Image (cartoon, rainbow, N blue to C red; front, side):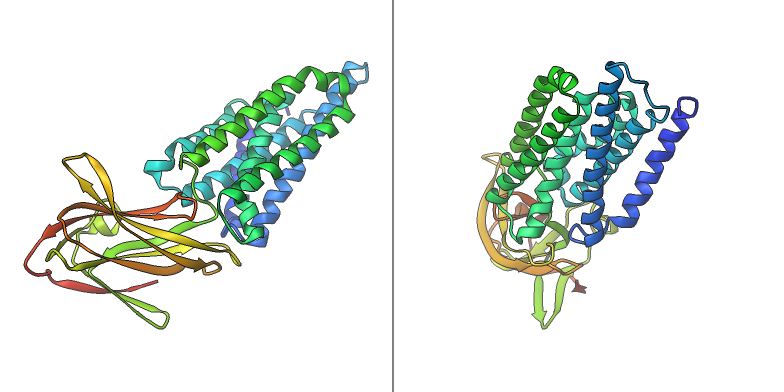
Length: 353
């Protein structure tokens, strides 16, 4: 282990990435939940086992030859957690809003490799484990309750905290003297993590998992027939199609535009989302809400729950439609510009899904 540590560590990172790509698809799939639960169980066993070994070593017992394997397993498992979080939270995030939380996840994912020797330390692994528990509970609890909102988030924190406290009792039982010296820093670290995640949630930075915007766009017309949505929009450059540029729509002022979005939600989850139409006031230098349209959605469809809203446009300039959760978190943002015109340019027809 000591001789080939760097090679084994790199292999573990690659193996963890491959496992995540195989098992992670939708957040509500049984295999996805099973993998995260397996990560929790392995973390509990590996952290507790190393703690027990170090306690017995301090009491004069011989250290097992296989002891270097244990922190390696902890590193691999926590790396799987962070890889999964980057995968799911990154897919659900609006980068311009949620980048601080995503940057923190990426930093921990990279730091998991850089600070691998710290996985032998009880304080370090416990604080990371609580962060992983809380981050997982945030999107796991809505999957099982079938709803989202502030109360679900608070309940997620309670679930994570209770599981973590029970784990601390286990560590105390396995090695009282060693645990007592680490108890205060572990508690302080867990409290900081709890407050930090709450800060991210109540400031709207935390991505709105388990909801995510699959597709969306602004159109001159959307017609819903059965399960088919047919939309019209003027021809745009390939940069708009790639999402690298906001569309510009030339319309007579007073006519309507349509915001379309397909929002993914887990099976059995029902909630309400809001389309918030906002116009940028150049004089005030701020976004002004011109309309808010709410409608219910149901989860389970791979491509997301299809829905749209319409708004009569009275002013030219910069516009955006924020697609938000019931608790005000941003699922997606559709930016566009409006130019006053006497008629609408040539349009193309799209089938939305």
